[in-house]
Length: 366
Ligand code: GLA
Image 1 (cartoon, rainbow, N blue to C red):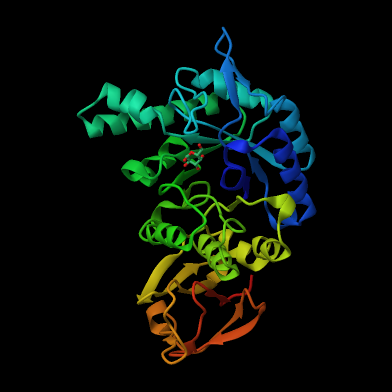
Image 2 (tube, rainbow, N blue to C red):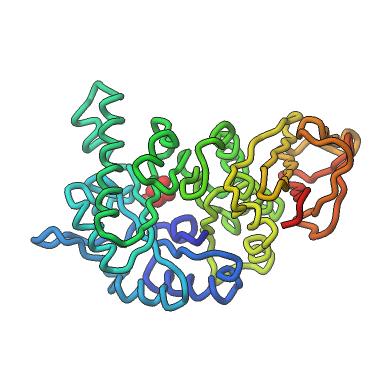
């Protein structure tokens, strides 16, 4: 759990923004709720000197000092690079400098690396194996393996985040090379249709996730763009159901209280961080209403009923079919957004607003 600069600041992020965000993670209660990593995304990179050593650009005058500052708040710090000659935003990448860069991150005290494919595709994969997709994929995997080994060689524990948009069944090979999380799709943006499309693409990937190695449906957009409160709630709930890394991506110094309340809902975070580490799956759907379940430690179960559409009304409410969730008889639980007890009964009508969610924890208390 943590925060990343890209989804709000994009290429404008500065040292000052990172410090202010770290301050806010503490001040808003996010740190107490479990947010730990403060991750600098693309556009911190400057030029390499004659020895190949990469320098920061003028937005980040002293990375070691920044890392020390973030650490002084009891938080950890992440950084960004890629295996190609350039990053996605056209800054200096790590190609040919993997060991040198990894060592520099470790010297700075970096705790997390997001490694983004981008220019490696045209510069290496398509150039070295123009007609051979399988050979291109082998080059890609080797590039990630190379950085994984370089990170390990530093002796510093550094979380390794693969960002290559889910290519070539990354969930099948990333854990073996030491990947801690891997993006499963292209980029998120703060629109319901995109969030829902990404959610739909996660179905079937549950078996690849587990403690230490997670599917990453991309960073949170909670509080960004024009997402409604219902959409923010549903997005956060479903990422928790997916056992997704919870990396907030909003403007923390200007966060509204209702967004803060969503991001720090401890019951929902407990679903995400459940020690069993079992990702949720879609149990069934009825048109645009979907029911997802997630098995939790101690025999508990999280049930999410999501209205992804906008055409269900009280004339024909959704009826919950408990048998389809493997449940029989009334189920006592807690409605995690209302914060109160709820009993789920078979065929009970559930009215949910457009793009809103009912998230319930049933069974053994946490
Ligand atoms: C890619 C990644 C994003 C972000 C940008 C930065 O698009 O998928 O998450 O890191 O690059 O340039």
